[in-house]
Image (cartoon, rainbow, N blue to C red; front, side, top):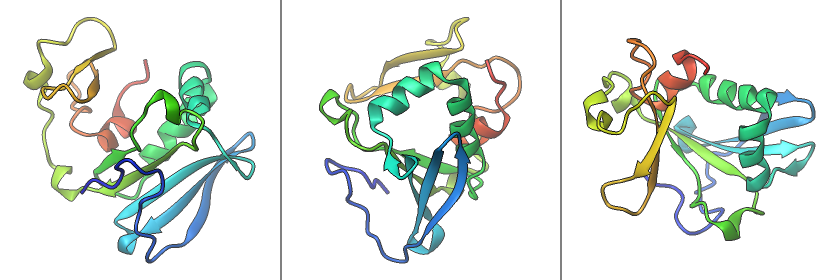
Length: 164
């Protein structure tokens, strides 16, 4: 189920309520619960103001406290496994509020990591990036750093992968 297309707010807002579940240094997250709890729509806020996408990207790169906050947000999701989706990211959208959804994906919860699928791209770096097979997206893939199977899906990764 793909929720984001070319619009910023195109989610079906039925069965909706808001909760403020996490906060640090004036940052908090608004979580809208959709579709009987199967979808969590998150908006990051600085006080009451949505954080623009460019600020989130910068914070991921430069602010360890923010990264920890975000990783904990992903790790604390109530789903065993999920799809993480954002609106398409382009330079003309960097001023828009950063938002994402976590979509419950029970079909991934017992999926093993398929290291062989990306083995030709792995190296000694913690992360590699390359275009997908269709050439219409760019993949960012963590290189396995241990025998631990933390790489099957983002929920497991955010909960168990070592911090580099």
